[in-house]
Image (cartoon, rainbow, N blue to C red):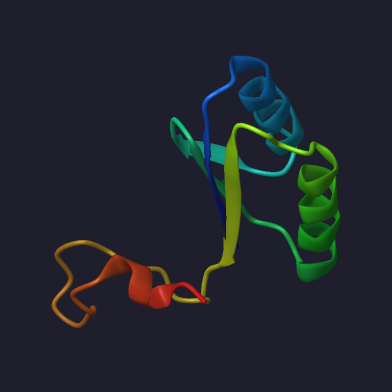
Length: 85
């Protein structure tokens, strides 16, 4: 699982990013996507996003660890980002 987040001010550039991510994962927030792909596919996605050459913002991609964080569980760490690499 990979998490992709972006902050892009130009609407055209933002649309290109959404179009690139559409077949790789699902949108969990306006500018955050969860992509359940293997490492090889993640590399292809990263290359595709790099080729977009975004000038008005940034795109970040993180690999999530195997065990998800759930809010309210007793044995989970206090920070949800503790499970990202």
